[in-house]
Length: 206
Image 1 (cartoon, rainbow, N blue to C red):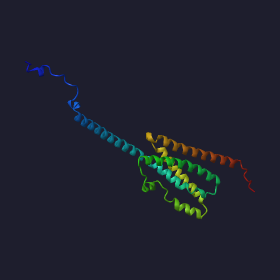
Image 2 (image 1 turned 180 degrees about the vertical axis):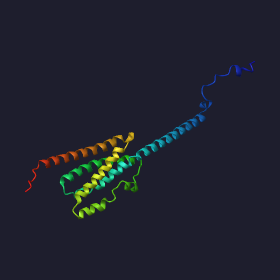
Image 3 (image 1 turned 60 degrees about the vertical axis):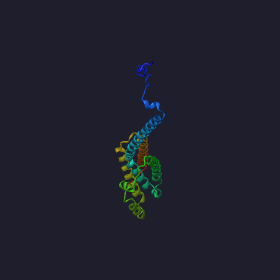
């Protein structure tokens, strides 16, 4: 006669791990819940990361806005009468246009919009009126160059005070390098012009 307590004494060895792992239906439910949790956590993390990057991208708005305003002014350069000045500002336009495209693509990547209200904060509001007046009184070149130099100075100040994030460093470095290259060429040209002027014989007073 079998011992009434055999089920205790000779109990089968207990399987390792939770019991639900050995139930097919429960195992499927557990896997579904596991992957659902992974997806939710991943979505939250991605959302947090995107929000953080977007806030960092917004700091680049002043740089992009200064570039945009400088290009707006430089578009009038074709009316310059002085050929050397035209060449100089063509070079500047090329540099700034390249940097502006890169800035715009960067902001679009993080869906950062530069509104007209923001652009107005960085614009020279009297430019259109002043340049129109300058044309009518034959002072276009001097008025245009005055505005370009003011816009360049504002842009240079913005770059000097800006602290780029890790994702902005390469783009910022290129923009800064392009402006330094332009200013270096301008200063060199100014020195050459002054040297040439010094060598030119001055008429003797009567």
